[in-house]
Amino acid sequence: MNHVAHCLLSFPNEGLLIGNFIGDYVKGSTWKNFPRPVQLGIQLHRFIDAHTEHAPAMKSSIQRLRPFAGRFSAPVADIVYDHLLCSLWEQVLDKVEFEHFAQWAYAGLHAQQVWMPERLQQRWPDMMAGQFLHLYQSMEGLAWTLERFAQRLSLPFHWSELLEFLAENRAVLEEEFHQFFPDLSRQVAQWRQEHDVA
Image 1 (cartoon, rainbow, N blue to C red):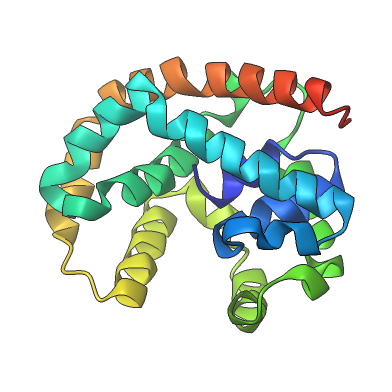
Image 2: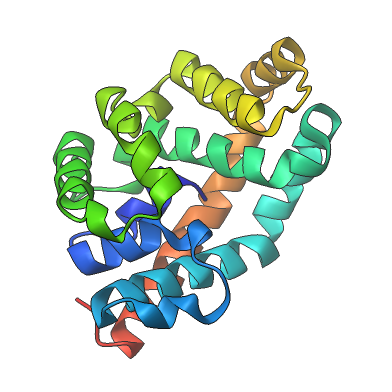
């Protein structure tokens, strides 16, 4: 999963939020250098990634995207699943409105920039200006997000073919997402209970 899911699965705990958000940038045991609430967020990020990696529905979606994204089909699937989460928001969540969640996440992350690695801090003003969580709500925003991802890694993606595939196969991808996300949410709720994190 990408930014939207990691932030959502931290709600409404701001310590978890920043740790979960920076999780990809924190390598090895360096998570121990952060305050306890941020440490827990980093650990939660790793838990989510491990669960996602082994989820059958996600594996199936990754295989569907492989002809277009090659060895980067897993992170592309993460981005696509964030788009599906946003577009299916009211089906998946009945207690949290997207706008309320997004404004909470923007404010919480902005207030805790001190914990962001330098390269993420450099990107942060543009991310905030572009309301990066909102981008996942539309196909246009999804296309822009994927293009920026490819530019950062100098990837030769087949953009038109990928977007056409997503449009034509949306139903099956949504079905796989529905198999995946409720289970992930339950696993995260259990993890938070075990770690005494509200």
